[in-house]
Length: 87
Image (cartoon, rainbow, N blue to C red; front, side, top):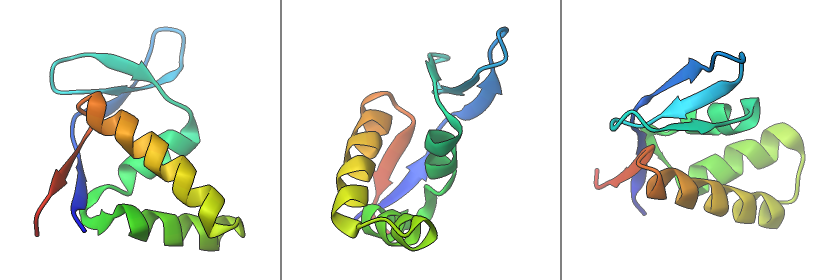
């Protein structure tokens, strides 16, 4: 399974909202949960690592967490905010 590495950075918009900004300078509004998950993409964690960690921390069913993480990570990849790497 590929490990996930975040790309870009976190900023605050003029309105004070959190935004994730890719390396092209495109900004995407994100809530604290999305930013926390994006920060977990340290180049060492796989999607399954994220699912396990979040399930344990939130006492949520793994199946529900997996689906949410898959959707979020797919969006991060599409928007250039995360890249899968072989390590």
